[in-house]
Image 1 (spheres, rainbow, N blue to C red):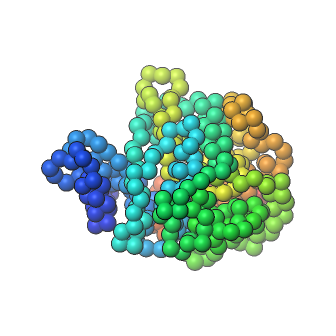
Image 2: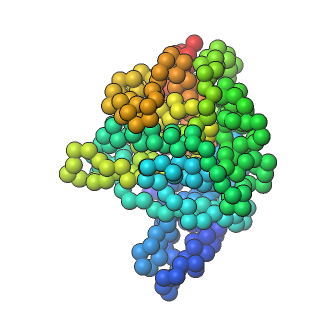
Image 3: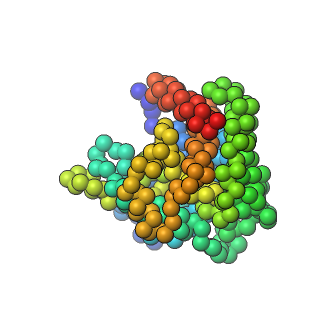
Length: 358
């Protein structure tokens, strides 16, 4: 039997700080319910006696995760500010803080259950298409923020607080200058190289040799040449991060929330297709999703997969996410039958993607 993880001292301190600031605070300590076991961050729901609840996220207590997983709280806060302008339900930031060397993000809690819950009905594909279009429109729209309003990690001091990008960079991970570049192709090359280095660091035996992956990527990188407009993509829009209602008695669910923005980065919109079609040939799956494509086009006035280059980019982003998925299990300590099955699926997917790009 697995045990529910206990909140860290830092989590307790953040929860008590939030509770102390509430004008309706009643006697007694806030109730902390741990969430998200096995993820990169420490996550909890914090509730007062009167029923008010927030979600608290804490960055890892050490730096044993993947390279891209640093500055995750700052990235999620930035994404909530930028993508939160969309007409899409998303958490609102209550406050940010740094305590005991860990970054904390406190957010409002949204209603609903994950779309992959057995107690929900499917989310209509046109709803998903409109949601994606609205997020991308917000993600490409200029955003202004006062520097004093943003908690920028010390290692990212030279970055623009409105974008998380260093001077001269337009694509890549916010607040990570070493994972940013002026062009989409160069940024993609950097982030893939980072996860290949992570694989070596954690001694992960890849199903396709790193040298072969680099060769396949170099041949396919010209597909990024037409990408000149950066878009902040969510990059984790799988069903577990889409909250829906009602839970019973309806033919289609209502979207009540998009959560977990920590993987957001500056890329092109095809990056967000990957989590919608995991373990498949992503462009072929999406092309067959006529309702999603129609709703996206009608809402944004743009095509999601307008040409063969866009399809190639979707496969490249699939390869990157699959590499992340096959490596992250080691630092997160995944184990058990479920992980063995998951790992085997990811490894097969990497081989299939590499073959489709060759």
